[in-house]
Image 1 (cartoon, rainbow, N blue to C red):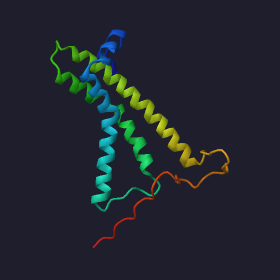
Image 2: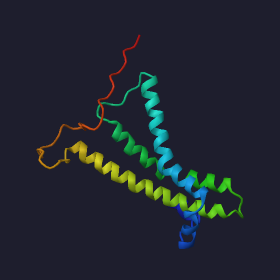
Image 3: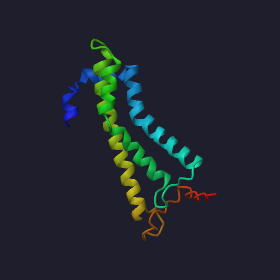
Image 4: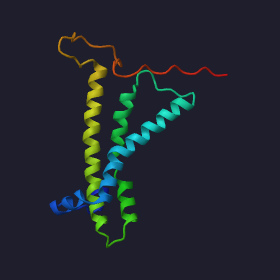
Amino acid sequence: MFALFAAGISVSPGALASAAGDPAAHGVALGLVVGKPVGIMLATVLLVRLTKASLDPSVTWSDLFAVAVVAGIGFTVSLLIGELSFDPGSPHRETVKAVVLLGSATAAALGATLLTWRSHVHRGWHTAPGRDSSPATPGADRSDPPAPHPVDGP
């Protein structure tokens, strides 16, 4: 909360309207909401594919993606980079501050939705019409590929 208030972010309708047409604002929003999850997923996939590491059997790729989306919430470093990237008189400076807040709020809402969905899947609360409503096997999600088997050492 301190960082939010100390940043002096203006969330006026004028600041939000100017953010809608600002390419720097678009980049910040996409970086928070799309870039961070994509980077986390790519790094994890490479780690699992290129090393002997593997996901815990109780964690699916969908679970990991839901957590990766939550990474977009972090706004303190984004505010710092926005502050350092633009001169004090630049029109982008205030716009970027507002978009960092909006991007973080968007990532929080998407992440909360995905984590709630994954929680329901793990608890077996998902049922489609005509399906049995009994709890599913914990961690069983038919939309996820099976976890890779660990590679045996030399």
